[in-house]
Image 1 (cartoon, rainbow, N blue to C red):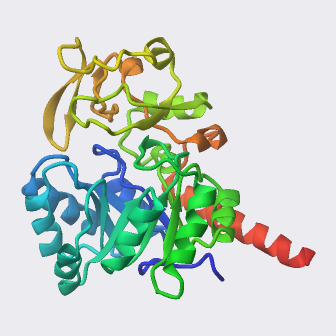
Image 2 (tube, rainbow, N blue to C red; image 1 turned 120 degrees about the vertical axis):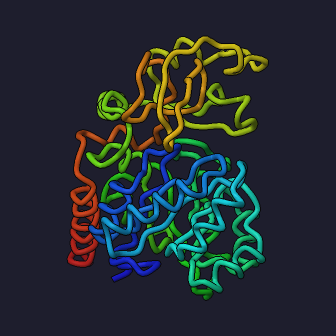
Length: 332
């Protein structure tokens, strides 16, 4: 069946690396144990000892393949060294150049490299340097968005570009259930990558209020008001919370610098002050004015009705996809 495994996993289901530390060892291991590919998220600063600790803790929770996501827009060289030294199954890359040299270095130690792209040209470059799979992100996705194309048009173009090369295309953006999974397969993808749906799981390190808002709200907006100073030129999709609605027209010359402190959080073991308009989402340690913090979510959030264990998300995705495919086969 076309919906079955990629990248050494039983199913073609990838859990997006949720920043800054929302997809920790518990979530990544739970997804991998259920037959998907769980992805940790590396810190946005050099913290090699912490990265090694994350990897080893995840290994203590699963003997299945898992990976780690690295945002190339931030310091990462020391973190990458540890990831390759630990021979993590999959290195997911985002927001930067995926070089042939890095891929060759990873392949020498048996690490698969999977960039996330948001455009046809970015996909072409990735294919040309020999990546192992490509995550294609549509503008419907939550969090930081690198491209402008919709998933339904971009995935088939990338699939055609890949041609007969053994490079699985993985669709990302507003996919939360078996219907989205089958739709992605119909576009030619061999797998799906889900962020918001796995954000709203029991094992996610998101703050409980953030998780509740994912069930409560069903509208999102593409914006750039959060984290302008820290990560310029990085638009994102967020929940339309009352705070966001009040500040959605923030003047372009304003950012989080010199804004009041609205909370505190421990992120990857480091104490952080959270200023208003900081792009850091609330995790389980966060205190303060949680409702005034960034809450990333994709357009599929309106389909999320409850907080579930990660294994149940996987089960419903797979069984839902199987049922739809079987129904379509029976109808022919």
